[in-house]
Image 1 (cartoon, rainbow, N blue to C red):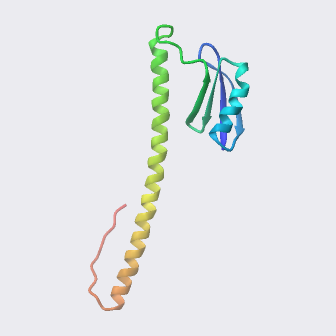
Image 2: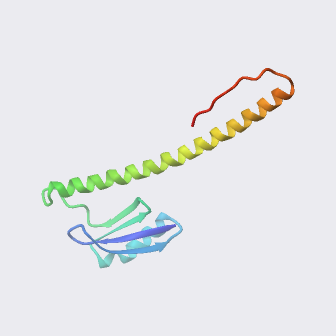
Image 3: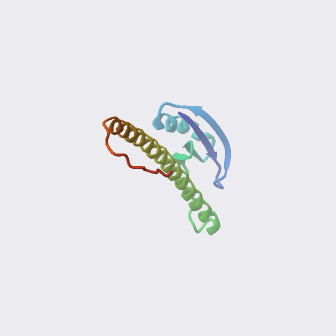
Length: 127
C-alpha cells in the first residue's frame, strides 16, 4: 500500500512529505518512527485515512487560536466525510450490481414462464 509521511514542525505545519510503499500500517508507523528525530512530529497517512501521529501532541487550546483548533476539527470531519462517501459509493455499486443480477434472473424466469404458456405481466424498472 502507498503511504505518506508528513514531517510536522513545532507550529504544527507540514514541512516535508515522503511517499513510500509498506505492507501494513505497523510497518509504516515503524518507518515514520525511525524518521521522527528530524522533526517534532510525524503523521502517517494511507490515502485519506490518517494512520498515526507520532511525536508532539496537538497544541493546547490556550496556546493556539480557536480558528486553528476549528480548522483541525474541520479537516478531521472532512476526512471522515470523504471516507464515508467512498464507503457509500462502493456500497452503491454493489447494490446496483445486485439489482442487475436480480433483473437478469427475473428475465430468465419470465422467459421460462412464457415458454410454458403462463400469462405475462409487464414490469417497468426504474434506476
